[in-house]
Length: 153
Image (cartoon, rainbow, N blue to C red; front, side, top):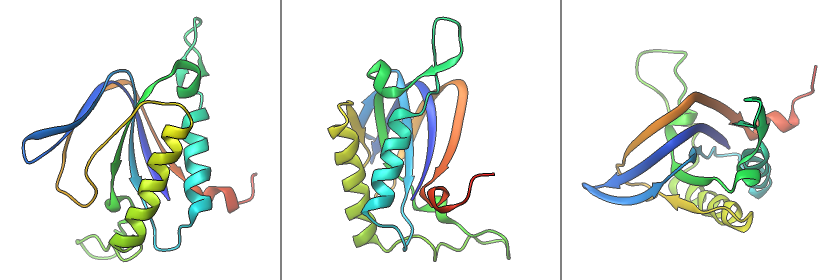
């Protein structure tokens, strides 16, 4: 499971010109699910996102997490995070999970974010969406649950 997270001052997501989610200061979480992901991947990624210290403290250092601040989250499904682009000119999405298992794990991640005590807005799974945001920093990070299996250097 992959999450592209962006620290934002505000963000919104719309479907068919109708706003379906909006947040103030917090994180936009673009969430992609691979065909090999499990519930453990969702749990790992949610824990990483909510505890990652990417908000500034009084000394302007990255020392505060979304949980520390009670930040809001906008979670949007994003299968294109699993695009394979090494060959050719058209992205290959075969590493992304099929819709049914992807939706199950996406919804589990949303539930886990809410269970952590954060306010969570979402997009609409498998719909064409337009996301607008005001990046704060800018701070943008890519997290991958597969990293938990890789040895640390």
